[in-house]
Length: 297
Image (cartoon, rainbow, N blue to C red):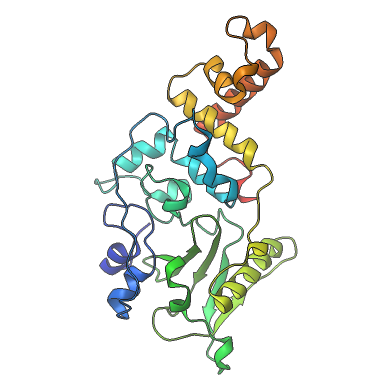
């Protein structure tokens, strides 16, 4: 995404397009909040191969307690076209991250808890539209971005819209601010929600935003647990097995262990074979079209 100025490039994200940096990086320079320190990521290029060790269930454990949108990023960072265009970023005529509904490039080497992608409002129906109100308000109605600084990242476009992400890497709240800025003093934020069905995901996000802004954290009761996470993780493991050149039998052995026959598994373990075949079929589809899943439903 095009930035409005150099500071948004340097402070909102690392210079080479790595994971979204906490807002403390921005506020530390602009508001002199030296009690926080930016999280530093060790970035490296990923041109092929699996994104995680498909032989180990522990490599995917963070996804069991993550928002379903994290699976969109996990599949995208395994996508060959994304990896290729990431490596070409910054070159003349290079395609931007908007191709993938992202507002900024993220290093595909970063797993979901560290990456914290900022999805566009056109892709993510939970994004809140907001603007600053001019009316007077009591102090407890004002939002101070510094109160949630450890969770915040931002991308700012040439149109001066601030695209805010509040996230700990597992849950995420998105807010697009038109006109004005949240950098500075506490502000009265006016939310704009319209429609009936389209309002539902935004109202859920608004409830989370209010609690986070008021308490400084989200209670466990407001962090959704994805019931299909275990199945989606098995599909990711199949995707990594494919990228690693592994066979269906090898994946079946890792998933089902001692239940697998060493030789006649296609006959003696036909139910397991069919399950792995389905996993491979879904994984190939996800690797090709990573954002077509139910990640933003």
